[in-house]
Image (cartoon, rainbow, N blue to C red):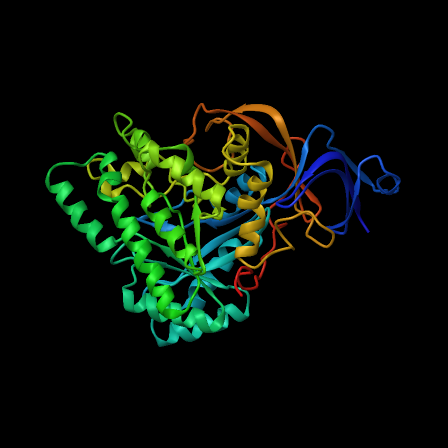
Amino acid sequence: MSRTVIRGGLVITAADEIHADVLIEDGRIAALAASGTPAAGAFTAERTIDATGKYVIPGGVDGHTHMEMPFGGTYAADTFETGTRAAAWGGTTTIVDFAIQTVGGSLREGLDAWHAKAEGNCAIDYGFHMIVSDVNQETLKEMDLLVEEGVTSFKQFMAYPGVFYSDDGQILRAMQRAADNGGLIMMHAENGIAIDVLVEQALARGETDPRYHGEVRKALLEAEATHRAIRLAQVAGAPLYVVHVSAQEAVAELARARDQGLHVFGETCPQYLFLSTDNLAEPGFEGAKYVCSTPLRPKEYQAALWKGLRTNDLQVVSTDHCPFCFTGQKELGRGDFSKIPNGMPGVENRMDLLHQAVVDGHISRRRWIEIACATPARMFGMYPKKGTIAPGADADVVVYDPHAEQVMSAETHHMNVDYSAYEGRRITGRVETVLSRGEPVITEREYTGHAGHGVYTPRSTCQYLD
């Protein structure tokens, strides 16, 4: 039996803050006891970690990543090995990545391909969602089988005609199936048909720079698609999770639906909270670094997203980590913004940026843990195994120094991408030590993990449903 004790830290979960010692046995949390009490003094272990003056928090759960994802004639730059290592450096101990069904292929083929990419390569634990690109009778039957084996969420796209796009009929059929089998439909809510018209018109006018990516993907078309997805889910009697919400008009649609008692959930991402169209408009071709979909919005939209996180109209912050190098990948879109691969790096930055939001007064410490750890674990059927520090939970634990300062930079990050979206940004707070199932992956700012430690994690259905 291997035992570790973490002493003297402030343990923060979504529900509580307590100065406590944490005893870990055989990869799980065995007990907590208030620091300095006889109960805590009785904890014995081979390894002791001093967390005095530090936070002890659950490892982050990033419910939206794209490792090795094919897109626009290239591939996301992070492999499961490099991407999960970077996640650990940033205090994230579980990712849920997206397996992709190709049009004409089966869900099983797509899932098997992603299992093959990830198995034996991950530094931290991982699960999968399934991207459904081709709804037909066979696909619908397969959805039932996947839910039974722990792939309980299915992503559809109202965007990207000719690639991942599903029409309203296909979306309704998948939602009806999810209503029956307990699955959760995740939606990329943008009106892709209308956006393609605006792209064509912009290029015809000679508007080719990266900033036009944001101008054609209008906030109203995100709001319209969000509204339509909500109403289709309502017709189907299915729950809905809207990914990467960026527009305040879309937040208003989610808030209205939730006020009506519908099982509708929303996620946003750090890039929408900390970056804006000012970045897309950076001179030269620099704006290409910030091309993602949904796109960055004007700076004044950030306030509505922060408010949504405080009021629980938005429940989760994930990264949508989908990195493409500036050199050789983002550059595919020189002279035509529509050919810039859509996606940004961020799996390493999320926990730190959200701690900065605590420092800045946007959210509380417990809300930080809620939106980054506990809620994604509940949303995707992994709680309390993941997302909290409590007896019986996996010992996915981060010792976090809330006073350390760092400057974010491509020079020092561990993602396999040649730029940082937050280059030069000075923030307060830094990961010091990370345990995954009790094993040290980061030890006092040194990588001590290894590929293959991370295991596949089957999931139950969404834990927010009646």
